[in-house]
Image 1 (cartoon, rainbow, N blue to C red):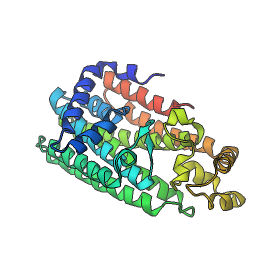
Image 2: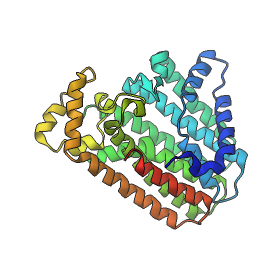
Image 3: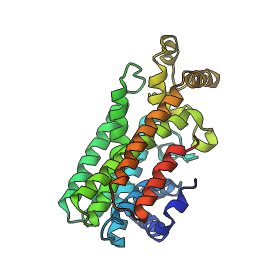
Image 4: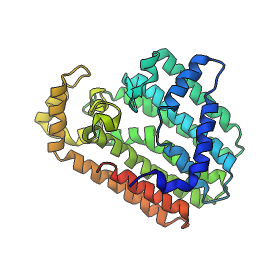
Length: 320
């Protein structure tokens, strides 16, 4: 399944959003503008803007207001990516050099801060206090998630609930907020925007679990970075936490470090596959997707509902 045809009716709005993103990163500082455009032009699925637009179709759709909300939420996502690359010391994202690699850590941190600030500036265009509260709470949780990722680096004794809380904060809540805020701006009933929030949360959890699986099953060409990169950087994801129950294997895992030999890493990846943890991770991802699909059954049937369903199904089948 190709993702773009699923929401082809949004193409005009998405083109406006892409142009608005380029305008949003313009700055009196040529360094900020150049580095921001570098990240923006590296591409991306623009999943959060898509969710804003689709959720808006459950109510009174205002193209300009939806565009502004989508740009603000995508800017928050982009800022978190820039900061993540500093935390993870990542040199490649989507097959291109990261901002921290092309410039340095200080530039990357301030560019991320600039994007956060610009998103807040855009959000002043909205009068609804609930939308502001949701965005503020989401940004707080996102930052807490980033800090927790630092604290949990190479911590192999963490519990599964630590992992789920971390991906909730770092990924799921922003997707949930994108769904809910798009609906709120479209003036839908409270019951509908709360259900869209739940849909976004479940999809967001599945989306991140899928990404964490693909880090062990995808090729470097597909991932835009080396396979097993998350583990090398000390990010302990679901497949690892499920595989680590093997005590003998745990001793090998605890020796993982960023400079380890590629053949050693490949042996570890092979062992993770052999434990069945990849299959179990897919099962958990699918459980979240099924919850998301169940929420859609409770929402009005329209083309946006169908598109949301197809996106959820796409997430569940990425290279699976």
